[in-house]
View 1 (cartoon, helix red, strand yellow):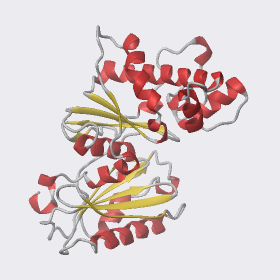
View 2 (tube, rainbow, N blue to C red):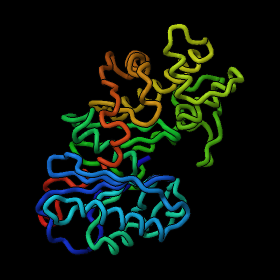
View 3 (cartoon, helix red, strand yellow):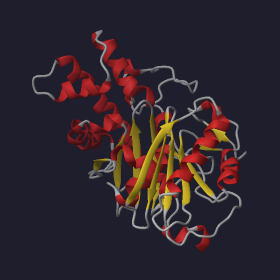
View 4 (tube, helix red, strand yellow):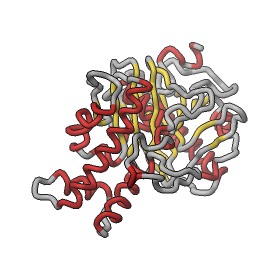
Length: 329
């Protein structure tokens, strides 16, 4: 998924940011995580609390309290900037949350409400965009001009960073890679599974973790999660069914990523999420992408997210760049 606006939200107290500390918050469906970084990006504190599912006011209060807790751990005191990653987007048309898996956020003016309770500007991005920011800043995409970072987990989304800045797009849907159709589908892949977005054949329903498990069950009648399937496929003595499922996944991911290369031609592709831990993806994807690329050679590296599960929350903190502190704006 992709989202909007790395622009400061509204007004608020803007003094006391000279220390350069940043707070990042990663709002998930079951847990909310916060991190405190110093000016150099070193982690000073990190906390995780339950997300009050279904409770909008409780969610706002949880973030308020988590920011206060983290800010209290700044060694010499002072204030920190706040960036937030959410599983959705802020609509440029209305300013309200849209496309959120945390459905109690949809239609709410989340940025305004957080700005009010935190008494400072807040930057909000989609969680996949935060992954991309983190990996472009000091991760697997550091030093690259254009970074495409994909989350392969319970869903499938992506973020794009161009020269250090998130590409949100006019409609806040840049990077909605998982809700494009599987490229170059074979006959037995048409029309594809139904998607919650109302369409058929979305890439998410071929390459996300639950989709891999469903594909394996359809082919073998065996119920396994995606991580187990890929682990067995990597074992030289592993069973043929898991190897065949992994082959289909690599082929589908290769087509999906080659389409990205044909359109965006990024300097690096970074993978995050649970499936990104499978080493066979990095061993096989570059060669598997080549036949689908509109080029005589495709040398785009495919790398594992350097910060792993920490990338989202770190990226939220990095939504405020060093020269963009409120007191320097």
